Image (cartoon, rainbow, N blue to C red; front, side, top):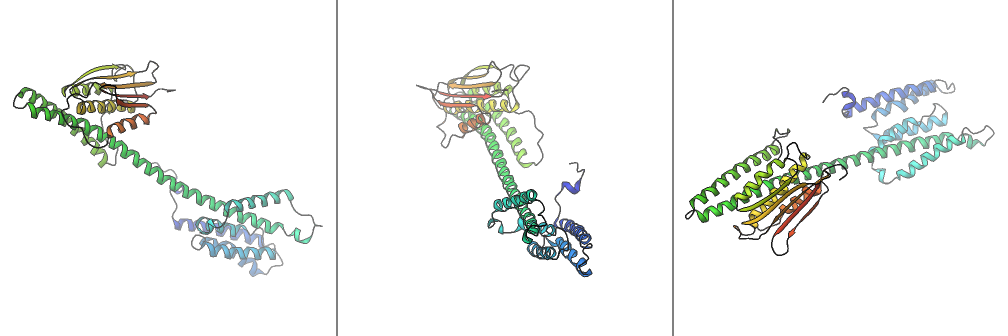
Length: 394
């Protein structure tokens, strides 16, 4: 990260903020001193101590906000009464800002009412202007307390607004962080489920076949073992990749994600498990120079077909199955349909537990605002359908 201005790019420490308050206090003390110097009726010690009392304690407003506010408020009222300095309310307002941000009285004082009172006071002063000399005495001196109310009310309102904004930003950051963690957990869970159920399910089916035909048909058992070897190697590669992503804080170096080009491999694996698969892939050249899908959509298509074929192998084999992946003519969406004519003779008993596969497919489709359907067909068979929009205006 290129920090061209590190002083303002990073959060200041408490000591640095106190130094800034000390500098602001010196500036205010100097301004009040120049204002009090023109008051000839004041003793010299008042002209010195009063500006210093209004300005210098502001350096401690972050350490003792309430005492500093009360001290400067008393001095400001005294300065107004004796006419020592002009607009001394700036000092207590400067301290009240921190009180409003850190104090616990925020819930007891209605911030909206104080803000409205401050706005009305400022508007009234702007409209009324300076009272005329022939007005009653109490009106002639009413502008000073009204200006004090406006200054203090504005400081309190701004301080509470900044405090509430910071708390809201902190809560929003925590919520977004928790949401990001949950989304990442769901993504990893989907990937693990797709890898494990497809590969392990295929291995279990072929292991059952090999166990039954080992003595009578050794050639068929050998073919089943070859399928088991290939599926286990592929599962190990994908599992190592996912574990590498979890262990490393740096972005992993990885190859292209599974996509349309891998659909033929899924079909071959399903056929090797005893499923007669008919394909209808009308979407360019499966990731070649034809129709080009976004990488995320290609991965979703691959995982949906993978999970659907895994369910056919686990619950319907041997069976006939048709797999259709077709892009709309307008180039706005891709439709996936997997239909089998099961349940045939099952190589394994039904798997107990919740159907996380269908949930994962539905979640992938919902991420792109698509439609998903899955259910039994009349008579026999099962159908999975998904439509994933990806083009403009879809």
